[in-house]
Image (tube, rainbow, N blue to C red):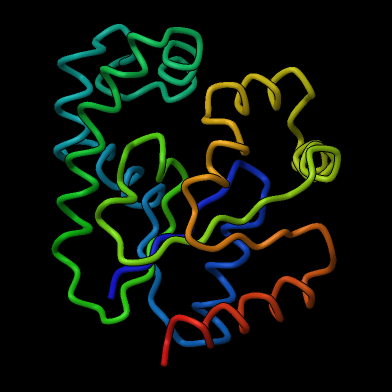
Length: 187
């Protein structure tokens, strides 16, 4: 069984995945971590990105800030990067044989990856709480809204989700909701 966990930036999806790792003993595939690994020097993603975005490299090193600025402000460039990285990440995911296989997939619906999973969980947080959390991480409001606007709307994600957890309370509230969800999907 393959289970995706998704949500907007700051929603708590990473906290939920860490809970699954630390408290429930599951190994959770982390798409962002795999993406970072693929962008290390001489890895497949690095080589393809270097070919497609040579202006984002200085002395053979990927300037991730420059690449982020380029793709966050240009839908065509963003699509080009996703067409490079998404198949590489998906290939790594398909190598996994865990059962159940949990995967943290930030852009689950945007990438159309929900079709690869038997179940998906969307973690949702009220906008004011989400903005407060992200500002505590050092992001400014403009950056937060730019990142959120580059993702599918929460309303659209809710329509496509199998299960939704509203993460507006404490950590213990979130953990209790995850436990209840696990009881539903893992018999």
